[in-house]
Length: 243
Image (tube, rainbow, N blue to C red; front, side, top):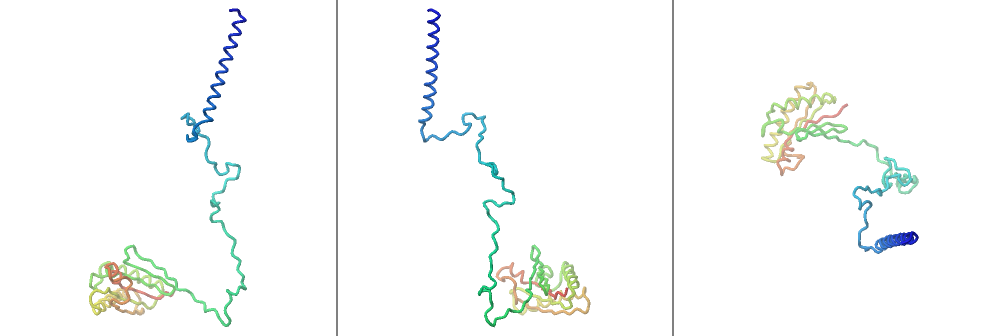
């Protein structure tokens, strides 16, 4: 074969290889274009486990808008609304002919504190302070004799009475509804007397006491359960707030 013949053969082989490559690329493209629509789309980097997808949700400010501040509520929730305009001359705001406003008064606001076990309760209002002690923390069951812990509790109440500047103290005893009313009346009065005598030891002799025994009257809880009856067996010490 002459040199010219060999050169022509190489050109023909190169053209053949190029044509074959073009046909393969076209066939691959056609296969992709005619893929089954039911096949799920491939994820970015699915063919290479080391590839990290770069597509993701846009961050605040990522699209060019300024990022919202932390104090800005999302989705405009909680944005303030302009105040409602009220017409002072509206008929609904006017008093009827001949009507007058009621005299002003100070509401009696009560503040109540209670121990976790409910053994002792304090209620303060604008005019009065009331201490409520369950009978079980002061006396043995069905007894009017003060126990060893009662002294400290009553002494604290006496200190509070003096700090408030009171001059008259009410001491009231109560029982549950078990037993006869007469027995409860005697027991509740004896317990009130015992607390009054202990208070008098710490207070000036000029103090005036009102002592009552009310038996099962004026319950503060349901007597159908032991928990309720325990709350009703009590002694209340109240006095006016002078300060």
